[in-house]
Amino acid sequence: MKRIASVLLAGIILSAVPVTASAEGQDTRVKFEVDPSYTVIIPPEIILDPQSDGTYAKDAAITASDVRLKYGQGITVALESDYTLTSDEGAELAYSVIPANNVSGDAVAQFKTDTADQTAVIKFQAGVPEFSGNYKDTVTFVISVS
Image (tube, rainbow, N blue to C red; front, side, top):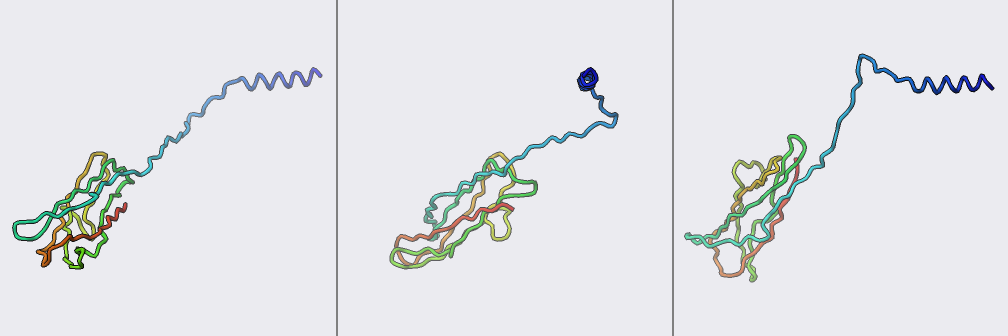
């Protein structure tokens, strides 16, 4: 019995002895994760204004804010449309969209990672309508990260 008690006592004493670290050191990882996030605001409606030459046009602002993406990524805004305004009576009028400055490809706006507000101005323009009427079209803004 004394022998068991002395073995237990030796185990307790050894467990209280501090362990020294080696001179080589130890690596510790420090990390965290940031999920991608951004807010893009597109105009809910664009009403073209008459121009002095009989055409119709309007500048429209697209705003991106709090853009936090992976390194090297950005936001691209493109449009899906047949680019035809149709009156309530069925008359058609083609229109175009001029992209913001420094935008390439099919995009109309591009934004980089930046927590400050960024604005891109695009221009919608239509020719001279042959017929009077209420003209409209639906444009889909396609937002992608690449």
